[in-house]
Image (tube, rainbow, N blue to C red; front, side):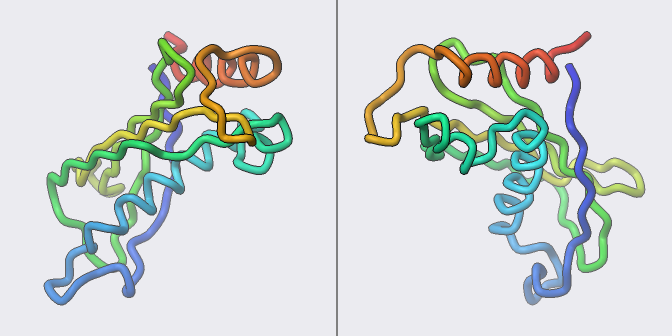
Length: 141
């Protein structure tokens, strides 16, 4: 499997009173990683709409393992899971850059709808091609 790695830094405004990154920011960091991966395959939200689709997140999980602090360099690792139905599933890891300590890991699931809000059950056309390229990239040996 091939993860896309995106670097970021924990900003002062992202820590709580105890000097630890506030839990809600991990979801924002997942989004940074997801957007970096989607950008490579022309699957950004605006491009999905141009193809006639939207993809709202319907599930998000996050398990916290170790706290990050202000100024810590982090690595956000993102991979897409091969879908069995018309959904997008991403897995994430947030690591401390200096020693690759796992800070958190999680997953999001996005359902695919037409722009008229009708459920998509099977991928077809250009959307299928782009998602196939994304998944192929992530699952290179």
